[in-house]
Length: 327
Image 1 (tube, rainbow, N blue to C red):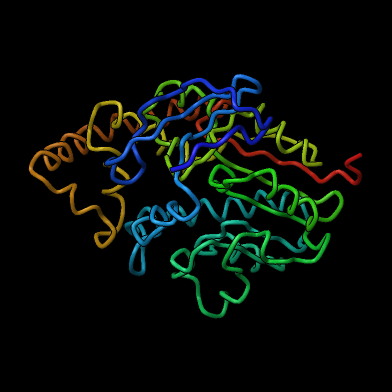
Image 2 (cartoon, rainbow, N blue to C red):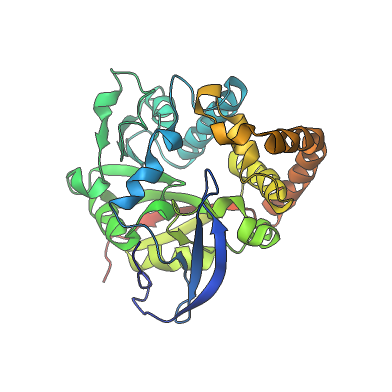
């Protein structure tokens, strides 16, 4: 573990925010969040070192076998990827796109079918295990700063629920500014710490997802970081059904005191579930959770619809463009 200072203002003036947040997958460890008193950024501190964080991105994170989740959930995720591709096509004509943290590449496949030239980056070979060998040549394994893409090469760069995972977001933004064409589109999505969902969940909020999430952004803080790097915000969206509805439902069960992120575990394919969640006590919790799920899901739908209409949902999407001159 290492202690860090604020990445936004580089000050070491923080106060406790949440002292005991359970680790995302098994809930066996606890981490603390602090808030910078100078600029307001909330971040995980102390946090795992660069070497230690790798164990949190093992096969338990990416999943084993052909599927990470059960077939129904995988199908719903595929629909979400298609919607994301359609949203991009509404804003830009086909060009060259980079998806940072591309996962199984399904988002890129959708755009390639529409005439885009696509590239992706991922940190682990585990993540792209389900990518076809033919398509894998478009994906760089490692940080985007090590890919050495040409200057002003991309028309669009996307980071779907990746930015909060970056240990040094300012340096990454510098590289993205370099490789994005003037006027090019930058899309960043992630959890909204100022949302009603986050306030409801508090330290039990699913989207805190420690220690994988280093930083926990509000719209204002995210906009400040991005615009300091030479981008200008175009618009925001609070419509992200894959993340918002599930985020509320899982947070609700976490607040009930059930086995941490139990629903997430049960939605995985059988080969990827946590074997420790099959004790007699947890089996009773599973039965209770499933009996309550229809009602909680309905509440989650209403909660997310209100969040979408008020532009204050559990997750947010920022659309920005690269300024031609940062001076």
